[in-house]
Image (cartoon, rainbow, N blue to C red):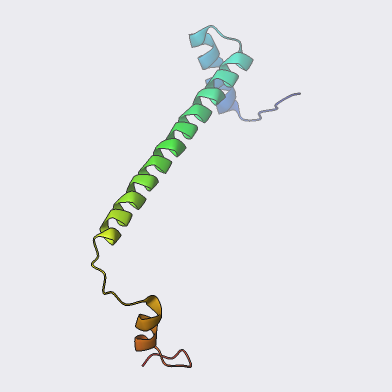
Length: 87
């Protein structure tokens, strides 16, 4: 299996990384890709945690809305006529 990169800047960056780490170019690329993937997975996880936190906050606010004691059907009947048009 091969990867053919035709970008001189990328080649130079890989050479620099390999020289600084003492790794082969292949190992340097593999390590860099693994680190970036881990970073993206962590970001995805953090984003998911934030999304869940925001959803829980919305649920808490919704639970604080006082109940009118009316059913959804009663409310809809008040707002819309029998053809579904607003009253």
